[in-house]
Length: 235
Image 1 (cartoon, one colour):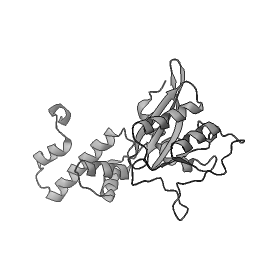
Image 2 (tube, one colour):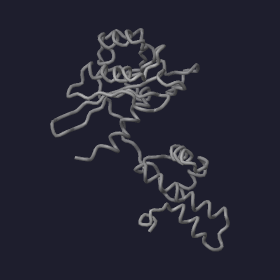
Image 3 (cartoon, helix red, strand yellow):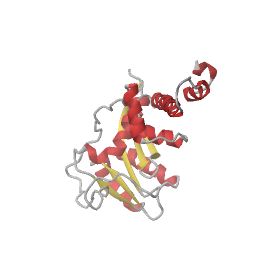
Image 4 (cartoon, rainbow, N blue to C red):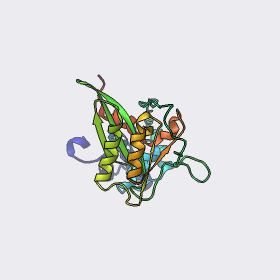
């Protein structure tokens, strides 16, 4: 009914004001409707923390604990993402001993955050099946804004694919003029001399985690899993 009337369920509850309910109870019903609506908008992928952020951004003031309780009442939970599948292959002969992991804080814990746009970036490659074969997609994500600031597509997974993605970010002014840190896995596209030289010439400091440790690649892995789950229809 609410959909046909072009109104939200929360607005309906405010209008109906069921008899015998206290203002607190009515407010709780409104929040249940808001949480349910935002959860469906996320394709059932948003968890408690993300739903809280989305609701507060829309002006719905609510705490993480309240959202978690409501999700339990509604018997809903975010869909689990499938295990991250790496698409790159390392090159044992590549010289990478000088490349450190710059995504660690002073205590050695992983820190995929940034306060200044263009200073800390992550990237990776995924692949999509099309009617013409496999399509490889490389992206660059800004850790300050969590936005894709550069991308590239090709039918092959060679070094120009990742260079073009970073070049797009540079050409659109998305790299900090004083330099940026770019974190990736140890795939051959990122460890080869061609890519290292390009980064050095564009004030980009490379950062890499341990070989085979997917948690060192968390932010970009999360993006690709979400991208594939939301935008690629099953074949």
